[in-house]
Length: 345
Ligand code: NAD
Ligand code: UFG
Image (tube, rainbow, N blue to C red):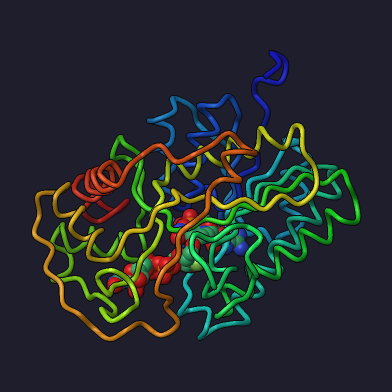
């Protein structure tokens, strides 16, 4: 990195959210200056002092919606960011089935608004949070980026619509540099135990559910199905440590210095773990009992999904470094120290 651009600013949408907050730290460590925007619909302002404590810096934060074009214009004018990392979005699959219009308006129209503001400001470097959900129920595992894309719910359709929008942009104007990162199952927390996942209400995802059982907030884990075509019958996923994930974002940002176009990349470990295996790993890391009961399959779930991460390694020089033991130990440190998430203090 050149000395005169050692503090390049990166606008982080959804910056107080689970992945966005960890990304801010990673950006800071890599010599970038994150500027955050979040409407706090699914996160807490209490993330901000934690980020300051961990980074020694007070990051600029705008409370607002990415659909507020005036606000975006003023942020781009004030900061002239070098790039954007776009995390802002609604992500609960079940909710998206119940409220597809709200999901489209927030996720797809929100991204349109952001892209418009970027184009007006001449900012054409973007790292976008896509998801393995765009592969639907895969024909093959591990899943490569060339696998067919299909969706099974409105949330997945939002991600696919946005991917198509980004592809069209890049095809029309070669100055766009877009890393489209397809996450597998992000989990875990910053090793300090000060930043982590703090879902509202009953967690939809496995890892925060297990953590809340371990800390005594919930009596037991419901395992959704033990009759899948997998080694122990429970669903298999690729759980990737959130710090590995955000380091992959910084690697993608660096890659955009030399690459243009629409660049889809899987971020996963390349290994699958079943529900019961993750439960056992968490019990071992936390020393807590995690009672469970087998329940019927959850509608819409697939048997198995894990990444072929070879493109990320070849293109970005990135691969996941942390193993499942660290993932569970870090998730437990966060949950144990903050039993009520950011409301704990
Ligand atoms: P999160 O809910 O913790 O973070 C998203 C943040 O965006 C929240 O802080 C929310 O308040 C904010 N936000 C939502 N709509 C907004 C809007 N219109 N304007 C401004 N802020 C808005 O979720 P996360 O887990 O950190 O996910 C980040 C991104 O990664 C999302 O786009 C999500 O779809 C994607 N993703 C997440 C997962 C996962 O399992 N966590 C998997 C694949 C992809
Ligand atoms: N599961 C349980 N009990 C629970 C929660 C989950 O048994 O209480 C099981 C599921 O049936 C599945 C596995 O744990 O087999 C993982 O489920 P998650 O809900 O944690 O994750 P998914 O793979 O279903 O979906 C997540 C995100 C999606 C995203 C996808 C791929 O929620 O938005 O990863 O990135 F698209």
